[in-house]
Image (cartoon, rainbow, N blue to C red):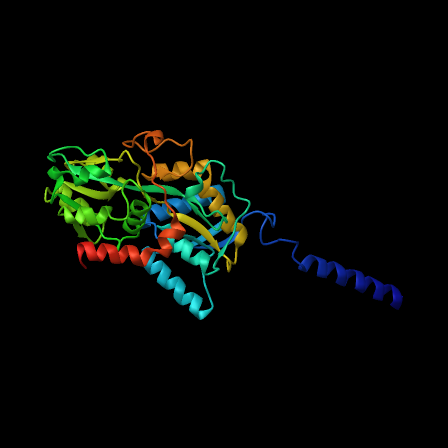
Length: 338
């Protein structure tokens, strides 16, 4: 009888342990190779756009929760640098304005490659050949003009015409990452050359800290022409400002708002899913709905933009621009002061 009771006790104990033990992956019904859990995103997107981006991603991958730190690119990079120094970087994924910051992180060995992402619909200039960062949209710089301007410019060289003397304003690459990329693109494009901005300065062009100052001066009639990012000019025109915008015939420089995963990512599965979403047709259509040109071919641009076939990109050698950034800034400072 004692032996029978002892055996029965062992059976009951085993059943109790089995009932108490959680089933495999009991905390989630999501398979281990599917995105789930917590994702930390650092981004320089404006609040409204960042919220829309996260909401759209979560609609596609609802098992992932997202925590966002949002600030300007400089502030994001400063926070990340402090975290690297402390040995505790927090983000899984970065989504910031310009590729030079990503290239710098790549050269520091901070980014993880994502060899599985499908890039067949993306121009090679928009992503790192080693697949550590990927451009998610195009924010181009073209020519904004006041509707009272003496002519409508069609070419970058038009800003050197006598009728444009003293009537050009541009953002400074000492303050604007987009302006620094533009300076590098002009320098590498032989028909314009490394002295293009200096020639603008010799013709009376002036510089302001950022794109907002350019729009203010041109819309207000203080200057007739400016170098400006596309969406700011087109949005101002739509809202009734007396401005027009031109994508010059030679081509336009662009920032691409790249995305990347850190090597220290705590949730690499979700980070790769976030990258794949931004580059997908659905993610690119989201960018268009937010007012940006898509990076992916085959996606129609937002209303008010010309067809993508009419928008040409100047060559953008991001590693070269990063390597020569100090010289580009010094040349600009010598030409424009400050």
